[in-house]
Every structure is written in structure tokens, then in C-alpha cells.
Length: 348
Image 1 (tube, one colour):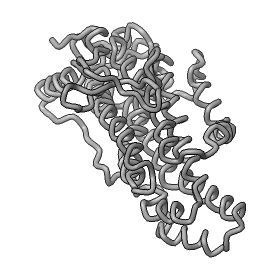
Image 2: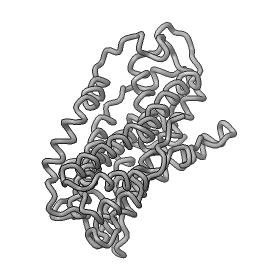
Image 3: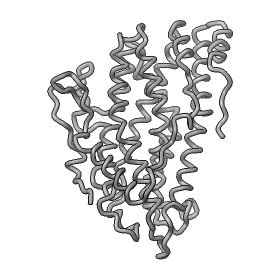
Image 4: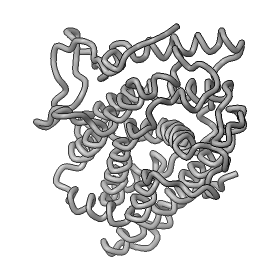
């Protein structure tokens, strides 16, 4: 039986030098050879690998995986971003990185999960990754994104990467603008924390609302993390441009990408474990976990695909168009920008 306590899953390996960016103490640090050490990963990745192998032995199948090509290409493309950079159209890019940082701040809510998760299952969950959601896995994830105590997390690291790359831009004004634009979505996310969930809104009306919210959160988190892979890879490559900070901003994104590695791994294992178990409904009826996970999986995947295929690109194109008008540039500049991105994909 594979058991770790929260202290284990939140432990960081020994570091010789902390990560400090522009005077700001961030999580993680460097060993004696200068190698970056991610936070809270002294035992976490090893534990996740043990749970993966345990699952594959117990159920004679591999943990699910989702290929990167499941998601459309990133917009703006690298060529589009460099096109804007060359023409001094920077505000849409600054705003884009601000938006990433604000989205990471929602990681704070990850830790708000139900306690005594065993009560939802007819199966004994001891020794599983699922049992460890409330024993450090979700808390570690939340601290990675939002930071903990005096150590800043990914939210602030994205802001720092932005500020290093676009030194002197009106970053605080951008942050306030983005927060105002995201007001409705922020409200919707906050509403998910309200204890009472209307029965008719649950995908399975017999499901305990706490468990329904947990499935919603886990599947949403999974697809947000998966969609971040190409976005973060794009950001590291773009911020490595010689016109921007001599690579310092790109290094910050590289650290963030390394920190993110355990997130998708544990989420896939937990959701696959739940698929194989029996869940107790409020009526006392047993439900196969797969019948509960899959509807949430489908909904989260479609919502995320719509966002990265349509909503996000439309927002960015609109920001570029506004800036071209504000700078009194020829309309052809906007058309050239759009043409560099190719045809707009549709979610399927």
C-alpha cells in the first residue's frame, strides 16, 4: 500500500540558492551545480510514479493519455507574435501574458476539496492517489500556482516574466483591464465554491454535490493543464527572442514548465482510479465511476477546446485590431497579422 503524508508531498528538496527574480523570492531554487529544483517535489513525482505503476498492475491497463495534437495550434503563432514585436504593437502581447498570470491565480481554489473522500466510495481507496487528494496533492498544486507564504508561485512568476520581457510597459493598467474583462468568468468560477449545487445542474442527480464538484474541478484542471503545454512552450520560445530580455524571461517560463510536470500526471491517475471504482449515490445506489467521470471529461474537453480554438483567438485578434487603430497604423497591418495565422480553426 502506497501512503505518503502531506508533509512528504509538500516537501522541497534541498536547495543551495533560492530563486529570486527582480528582488522577488519565488518558489524553488538551485542546487550546487546550478540546476533548477522545483518546489514540493522531493517525493511527489516519485509517489505519482508509484501510484501509476500500482494502477497498471491492479487493472492491467495503462493510465489514460491525451496526445498534444488533440488541441489546435497556438494563437498567436510565433510568426504572428514576432510580427507584432517588429512593428512595436506590444500591448496585446503584454495583455496576453497578464491574462496567463491572472488565470494561474485561480489555482488558489484547487485546495478547496471535500474532506473524508472515502465516504463517496464503496471501494477501499487507501493507498491510492485519490486518497491523497486531501493529503497534500491538491494543496501542493495550489501552492505551485498561487504561491505560499513568502514564496511567490506561478501567478507572480508569469507577471515577472512579462515585466522582464516588456520592461516599462504599463503592466498594472493591463492587469486592471484584464481583470475587468474577465469579471464575468471570475464570478462564474467563484460561484462554483458555493456549497449548494442545484440538483438539476448535476450531470448525475443522485451524486453527492461535493463529489460532483470534485469531478468537475479535476476534469477542468486536467484539460486546462493539458492546453497549457503548447501555450507555455510557445511562450518560452517567443520570450527567448533576442529583442526581449536576453533570454531571462524565457528561463522563468522554463522553470514554470518544469514545475507543472506532476500536475497532469496525478490528475490522469486519479480520474482513472475513480473510473474503476464504485461511487455511492445519495440514494445509496452504486454507480460505476466511469459513468460519472466520462460526462465531466467530455464537458471539460469541449469547453476547453472551444476556448483555445475560438474564444481565445477572437479575443487576441480584437486586441490587435484595437491597438492598430490606436497607433493609427494602416489597416493592412491588421490584415497581414491575421493572414500569418492561417484559417481560424473550429472546435469539433
